[in-house]
Structures are given as C-alpha cells and as structure tokens.
Amino acid sequence: MRAKRELVLKDAAVTKPSALAEFLGELKKSDSASGYHYIPPREPRLVEFPAGLHSRLRQALRHRGIENLYSHQAQAFDFARDGKNVVIVTPTASGKTLCYNLAVLQAILNNPDARALYLYPTKA
Image (cartoon, rainbow, N blue to C red; front, side, top):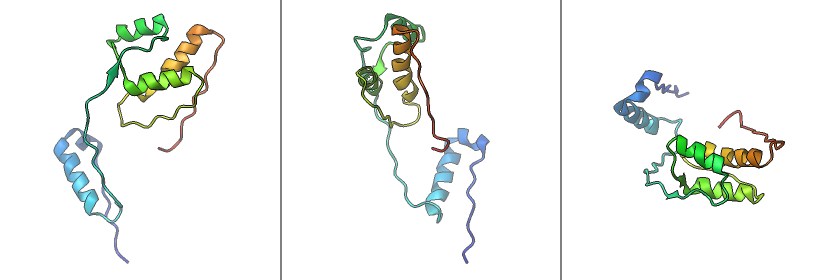
C-alpha cells in the first residue's frame, strides 16, 4: 500500500505568497488532488445603488466609504426585493454578505416587525 503524504500549510505561512505557491505546487503533485484550475482576478463591475434602496441604507453605506455596489450585489437586492429566490456563488471577499443583508435591512426599515432567518451550512 502506498503511503499518503500529508500536506500541511501552517497558519503563519499563509501570509507569504512564496509559501502558498510552494504549497500549491506540492498539492498538484499529490495523490489527494484530483484537479487544479486557476481563476485569474478580474476588474469589479460597479453600479449605482438600486433606485429602491432605503435612504438610511444609502447613508450607512456611504458612511462606511461604499459609494457603489458590485453588480451582483445590486442584482441580488433587486431579485430579493421582488420576492425571487437568490443563490449567490462568487469568489472569497466579493461582497456576498451585503447581497443578502441589504435585502434584510431594507425589509426591516420598511417594516420594523419583519424578521429574517439566516441558515448556513456547517461545511463549505
């Protein structure tokens, strides 16, 4: 039986790009990796705040230095506001949290008795 190699990336090494590149190189060579695909970064597509966005939300966003939304955030807001189901799949740090929080906060501002239920998977 073939011995399995263990690949471990120590927390401290994550901050060094060279360590991450080395780790990925080792991972590609291992039996535990079935595939590898690099998705290059791309420029964000920014849009104006949706027309129906509550003024207090606009003010809060601007107070935090947010002058525009990513296109997927505005689209998710519009779909949720229209009562449509929304599934969001975007890369890490692309603003998914704001996609659903905008619609929830909008509903609460429009109706203080509104409620929301957040469900998260226990494993990604």
